[in-house]
Amino acid sequence: MSFKSPQLGLYIRIVALLSLALGLSDAGRLLGVNLGATSPVAVLGPVGFVLLGVFSLSRLFAGVGLWLKASWGAVLLVGSTAAELALYLAGSPDIRMSAFGFAVRIVLLVAISVIFALSFRFSRAQAAD
Image (tube, rainbow, N blue to C red; front, side):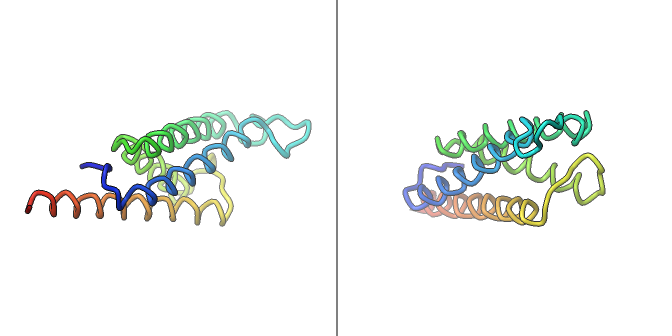
């Protein structure tokens, strides 16, 4: 699967920026932005803090990979976002997100699925030529 197609370039970069913004937002939550003197570990719990750290780092690395148009960035983004949404929908008390955060993660998952579909379509069109 090749993300080198010029038609996909801008779309992939927009998804990369969205992934980076969400990763930085999660990193801000890890650092305790807007919590005052309260520790983020006390608010999130130890397991929630670790999970948020893992998902934040994976989303940041995925954003960089997408910006470079590497396929591993898309795979990492799908894996981390799907795992986070699965844990949230399963009712895990350690995963907390707002309705807006849930919607952004769904948009990321749909956007990366569209990228996979378009990339597959372009690669089949090139193979037919």
